[in-house]
Image (tube, rainbow, N blue to C red; front, side, top):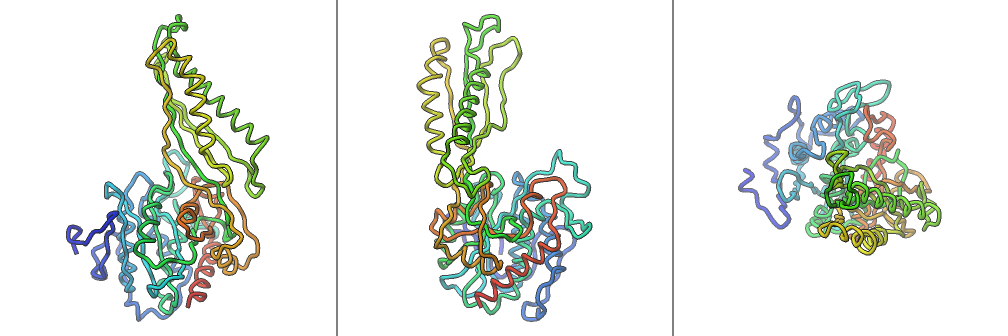
Length: 425
C-alpha cells in the first residue's frame, strides 16, 4: 500500500497493513529472511536477539535524523508474524512513534515502552564503528546497545512466543526521547485513544534489571538577554548583556545552593534535592564592545515534590523587578526573555502501583530504586497509567564512547520479558 493511500487519522496515525509481509522495507546491510510465524517453534535465543540488535543499531537514529527506516524494519517484522502496527507521526512527518498490540484486544495488558533515538557520536573516541555491533570479552559495543535498542530487540525476538497471550503486550516505541521526550505525549494520547487500557507500563531504560519506581523530572530553558551596545570605555552608556547574564547565572547558582542546603529533600534520589545547572553560554562580539546579546541554556532536574514552576517563577520575578528596571534606565529596549525548550515530569513513587508489583515479581526483587535522570515513565504516570522502569544494561554506559551491554544483561532482559509472557498467558 502506498503512503498516499494509507488511511490517516488524527495525530497523523498510520495503520500498517499486513501487506508489509511481502517485503518492501528499507533495511541496513543485507535483507533478513523470515520463516512463516507458524513454522517458528524454537524459543528465541541470545543469538536471535543479537541479530535483531545488529539490525537496529545499524540504523543511525541520532535524534537529528529520521527514525522511519528503523520503524519500517520493525513494522515489516511484526507483520510477518501477523501483527499490525500504528504510526503516530511528528508534525513534519519526518519521524514517528509506533504502537502495536500482540494478543487479544482486551484491557489489562502491559506496555513495553522504549525510545528509538540515540545520542550523537561526534567528538567521542570510539574504537569501533558506533553503528555496527562488535563483541569483545562478553560485551556488545555500539551506539544504542545499552540505551536502549537491546530492550527493543528482545521484545521483537519474543513476538513469536506471544501467541498464547490472554492479556496483550503493547509495544510503544517513541521518537526524540533524548532531546526532551518530544514524541511520547502524542504516543500516549494515541495509545489511550486506540488501544485497550493497559494495567501497567514498563519503560525499558537501562537499570541493570533493577526496578526503578521514581525518577526526576527535567525542564530545559533558554534565556536571552538583550542589552545596549556602546564602547567598552563608556560602560555608563551601555548595558552589557554578557555581564547581566552572569548575574542571572549567579542568581540561579544561589537558588541551587539553597535547595542543596535546605531542601525540599527526597532521600531516595542522589542527590536528594532539585538541581539547577547552566550548560552553555553564548554572547558578545568583541572585547571592546559592550555586548548587545547573550544567551544561556539551563536545566532543572526536579524531585517529584519540587517541580520547576516555583524556580522559574522566582527567576522571572527577579528579572522583572530587579534587573530589567536597572537595564532600561540606560537602554529602554533592553530585555530578558526565557523560554521552555523541553519539559518532562518526574515519576513519583507510588506504594500501590501494579506496575511496580509486576516488575518486582518478574525481576525477583523486593526493593525499588530511584534515579536522577529523566525518562518517559513520568509522562505515562501523568496520563494515569501505572508505570515503572526496568531494562537491561547500565546507565553508566549510556551516552559514552564505546557504549556497550554485556551478554549477561542481554540474557537477563530476555528472561524478564519471557516471564512477562508467561504471566500474561
